[in-house]
Length: 106
Image (cartoon, rainbow, N blue to C red; front, side):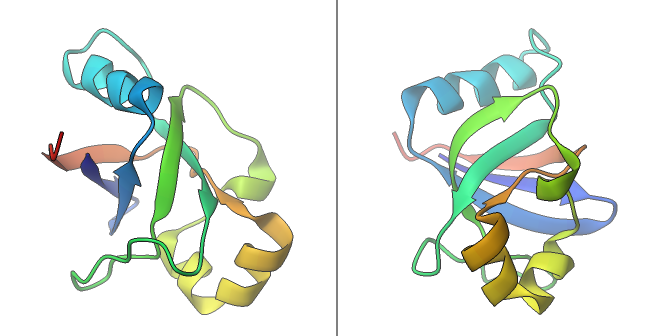
């Protein structure tokens, strides 16, 4: 499931493969969950979005209600410091991300 999020006017996409993460996204869409925080491990060779202004995506594993500050940022921060994010932080979980589109490939 490819989910595109908006974080303060910047968009990025996550390819959710984990059934639990997919269910959390669907629950958010059904307004059965307050989850606003996609959280996943960043991978260099992962699915990359091609839309303008989109950031490097993660392989989504979780979609939760909170995150810690070290994982927070804008998609452009990840793009600008990609090596740092990949090698040091290793995850991306913005504090608030709104779902703007979902493509279900299941």
